[in-house]
Image 1 (cartoon, rainbow, N blue to C red):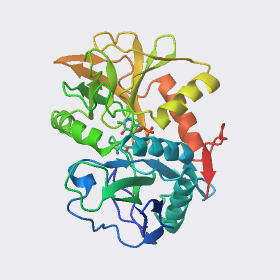
Image 2 (image 1 turned 135 degrees about the horizontal axis):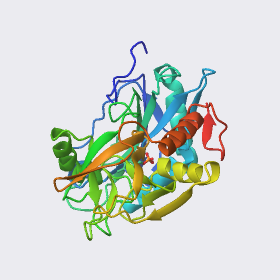
Image 3 (image 1 turned 45 degrees about the vertical axis):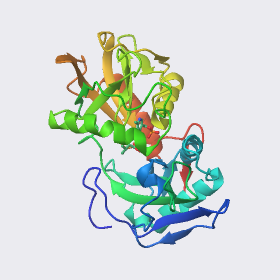
Length: 334
Ligand code: PLP
Ligand code: COI
């Protein structure tokens, strides 16, 4: 790869991974130089949203080697998504092997160390085959496509402005906790409206009462109180973010912070000194302000990343790029 990635835009790499499920089992899987799929126009993925995906990254270390971050956790969450959508699970060990194989075959697309860039890995599963009526597909395709990427929200380090939306991305007992395409289809209008109005992303409120922050369209939300407590929403309709899980651990175990999973009321953000969005694509992006129904709340740390967020950012990115020892076997060196 000669060119450096331009934000979160797609660049085709050498190969994608493909495996097909038919008659009750997965085939052995293969790499393919194309990134195109030919499927029936009646595939359930196209009509009934039988699709789920994952997102993880491969990072170039200073010593030139490449490592994955928490791939097993992505493999497990992927299984939860598949089960919720009545899709066959892809075995965890096979998921890990397929990710390794795909990254190794595209290794020169992993950006160099030192630029906060990485290789984004997008495993996904779709229901395929002819299916006119509403029922699970007769066949499934598991694939992995990779692309070098830079930052998702125009430079992770500068705080961004966000705005709440009155739409919901997920229903109270729906699929918000799993990573399925339908949640993203539901969130797209809010995201586009937010961006058109000059915000980085939309913030969704809890679908039952619309009074509490849930998460952004592409990342979880966290806040840090004046006394250094890391607080993040607890709700059955938000995605169980692996980045957020990592931050909760690092805040508690490495920074001795108090960690709370609780309610963050949109009308009462005054206790938060710092706020941020976190996720694989978003990494840790500080949030400068949240606008709710024309009222803009600006967090005290709005010009640069706040001190606690910065410590968390340095710890997490240090582990992801191999500069800091991995505390819990999160990293897989290829
Ligand atoms: N929430 C949503 C809606 C997301 O799309 C993502 C991205 O994956 C996240 C949260 C963060 O999850 P993770 O840290 O596992 O990437
Ligand atoms: C990720 O962070 O991996 C995601 O899937 C978010 C996506 C909307 C880019």
